[in-house]
Image 1: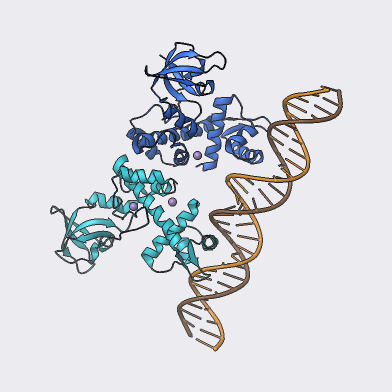
Image 2: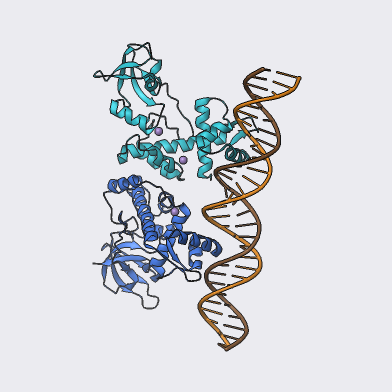
Length: 219
Length: 219
DNA sequence: AATATATTTTAGACTAGTCTAAAAATATAT
DNA sequence: ATATATTTTTAGACTAGTCTAAAATATATT
Ligand SMILES: [Mn+2]
Ligand SMILES: [Mn+2]
Ligand SMILES: [Mn+2]
Ligand SMILES: [Mn+2]
């Protein structure tokens, strides 16, 4: 099929387009893949030959339909494996990423179908990210970052923007986990930091930087 | 750590020594790895440089203590994953090999510990093969091939020699699965084929070739 | 003991993926 | 519009793993 490296490039292109915008630049990809621009150019030629990306020299890249299908399938596998690790093997949400990064490349349709079934067909992964369907559909969530809300707004935490272990551990320690209710008690005008009430009980202060990395849905 | 290829070579060396005898030849390894002798020689140099094997030109190879530890760890992971697939994901014993061949290379101590725990620390895999411990001990079973037994001997099926999907499917169809009791009703002198009674119920005939690939333990 | 055959290693080449350094193209600033 | 800076691509080299063909060594046969 495709090599691990090809799969990782396709996933990176998908995610960069999702976040940043319409086309992905060579440098952005090099940054994300922790490699050099020259190496990226080589890979882009290869992916282009295989009709997985649309690529013209100096013009950046987008995924073809075929390439997007591959990317979404890797993302599906990654998120299902993360869910498996958390739900069945007692991993914490900050421990799953590196292992899922490997497991996502295991090639077996039956395996991933059975994992999906075993988990009772989850819709989102442990970080609140939606799991693409087997035929490559991804329902994008209506969540917004907490920093966009106003005083007295009440919302439910549904995801995170930053997926780093450090941030996830900080959230755990603060009682900010998926499903919790967050009410904005006050917003400090000076630095846009927030005073919030979690689950109608615990009051705490979070910086605007933190609020920008918490996804919620209005109650 | 070590590449997939290195791990597969070490496992192959381990298994060849286990079956065939004291040292492994270049050609035997080439055969097993479905590659050419020249490629094997290249890899042997590399594994020798890494102190994973004892290798002298033209003299065959053995594993060092370090190499054996790596091999046993891969075998442990392979067998635990096979067990997981059968026990938790409804795979049949003839369907697990190729997937386990990939999963055995996933690198995460926590993952394999948790899988072991999740399965309640199994001692053998779905084919009756013993699972090495985390610190590299392997309890070799006292099973023998059915063809060595005599008329009227009663035994319990504990494993298989041939692991091919074809053979395993044949066994399934014949009701010859692990744990079943096998009584030898008669042995045909001419071709050493057997008439056996499975679980005190079903009588069937099997060739000596089949009997040589069924492992049992005397009751 | 000499020769023939089989096994194993070396030599040299190829692909995937990576790198550095230099050249080419594009974007930005005067 | 031209010069400067930035981005991207090319050129050439490196490693891991593989191959074929040829050379070296070991084993078997006479
Ligand atoms: Mn990956
Ligand atoms: Mn995730
Ligand atoms: Mn393998
Ligand atoms: Mn097995």
